[in-house]
Length: 231
Length: 381
Image (cartoon, rainbow over the protein chains, first blue to last red):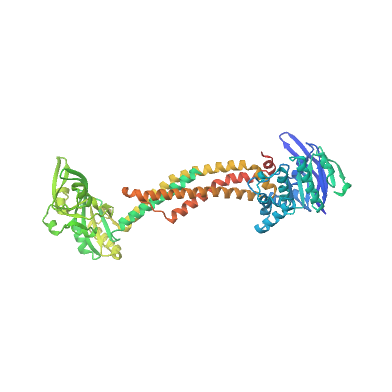
């Protein structure tokens, strides 16, 4: 089953007189359990694509389906629910709430989903244990290293058991060692059958993933399926 | 925050003082029971063709069975003097029943009686303050007091013998009993007022509270039959006085609360600014929350609740301050006749007002927050 489907997606920004075509007819599928790397240099339309995949923005033209629901037609309120339940965001700069503990950060999407407190605690703890932070539940983000913060963010993204994880340069703000730890977690999640979509310009990521989508000037340059290593 | 604290504190204190004043006035007015009727002449002058007279008090008493006592009342603020001390006093020319109607207690000596009235004796019963200020002691029976009358031909002393001193009483029916110099109306008229039996007012007491209304109607009937014109006199029952007084204190309260409300509005605008800054500071946080699934409605509610909590906390601090201030006023204000009473009504009102201000002035910032674009908000540094 296709977790996500893009059909001829265009995004055109109106900046006064000038029209910027950020995406020019992008189409691809993400199947259940795939580990997709979307790669491209800056200005290739990566960020725009990320916003559309993350349901933060709507395409100017074309359709986006997530689990066969057309999100490109949805209202704000419905999009918020899709973001909450179907998408797990992992940002380059972690984006944890500084006043909340690791556990509370992971609980937040569960609160928005209306999960009762006891259940919430349980799930949040489970997810933090999965990313190896079972002993850091009550730490504030400032008391954690960058790598640990990103792992909290991954736990938060997984909390509502989303259709796919959407990561934006997840290792961009990390040193090599911490970055490698994050990639290991991604591999582990992929092995567990989770669907992952990583948007990056980091060429090192080409070794990861089961499908590589190259983006250039708002168009898809190539889609290749990575059969090596079965990752 | 400070604006709300001051505003709520002020509202609380003002309402407490207002309630205190109302309670105090109610107490003094009702201290006689609710069976007193006051008749005032609207044509009181030396030359009026249809004047209210002392004889009317006698007639009302004789003709209306529901009336227990009635007295004409001549009253003027005059200078009184004794042993070189000069003060201002409230001089009354009345009939002996005045003591019953006003429920006055004698501390020393005796009250005025019919013989004083008939024989035009120059005698006086004086209040606590008069005795105290003129003589520096209470038992001054047998001393003399001079009422100073100033007219076109210069001032002149009229001397009276003190035959009685009243207990310390305070205010009765809007008159301060402690400042009274009570004279038989005959001698007061003859030597001071020169009204030829005319009077400005008649005080009537009904047999009991239940007959007060009937007594009022019967008195009105008597007066109308005499004058044939309801504009020449006015009748005030005690209930009517209470009502009028409450109306006045009520209006005063509204005005004062209105002034305090201005500080609440200023405080509210302050809260709005704080919240707008908060929204700005937390733009990124809002973006994150939206990205992980918070609806716009949810963001709106979060900021509204925060704003309400902020003002309610300020309101509670204001309430405590207002309560303390009211307590101080109740304690130290006695000397100036000020009282303050905190009621559940004022607490509930202060609480409600601060919550409403939080809601009202929180709407705009919360709405701003909820309208942020998640993309822009996430990008905000």
